[in-house]
Image (cartoon, rainbow, N blue to C red; front, side, top):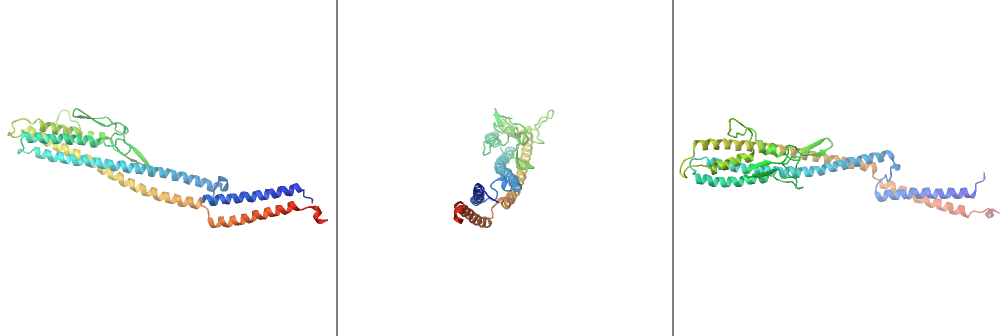
Length: 318
């Protein structure tokens, strides 16, 4: 059978090109450390790698959310602790002022301190997180939630609750709306038997300030029975407010624990993903280096054979 010179030449070039392509692919694998450099290398494995990388990206986003969530919860916990400490001081002053040994001028002095605590509680209730978002505004976390209008504190937020995704199936609240936390104190008594309604922390403290500052009578006279009744009711309201804020603190503590638990789950999952990704796409360097050497030898052999074939002529055999 006769083989045309052009056919021999074409086969030689094709062989060299194929060897070069394989060699370049191995070089690329060694430079990237990846066994799969294009989907065509292993379509099934490439699809697995894509899915694993997507899962890794989602989980890393959940971890970012957890960092934001933990920061917000810790700031909220600190803010509520500030309110608890302030209310405890207000309660202590209330008990002192309700004592008959205190005169009107002393109660007036206490009312001035109560006024400072009133402002402090407003400040704590308008706490922001690291992103400048108000923790107690509900969904409306860009506007100041509590506004003091002449001693009457109005809530400008809503009754929503911000949630952050911490896993594909789990969300955790990053804050509490101010209405449920501060404006609606359970079992509080406004002193109006015909029109009872829940009081806010602010109205409870403000009423205390008002009762103390408007106490009538001479400095040496004993407080009236109405005064003592009002003070006893206010002290009970302060206790209710304290209990409600402490309950909110406990809920935050539970969320922090849940967040940390989910963080550990996500971290372990990321380790598993990394291991699976490595098994699926990482290069076996020992095998690749051995293959590279074989391909280099093969390419050299193809080049040498092609050179010899090019030099062949019928006159060499005459």
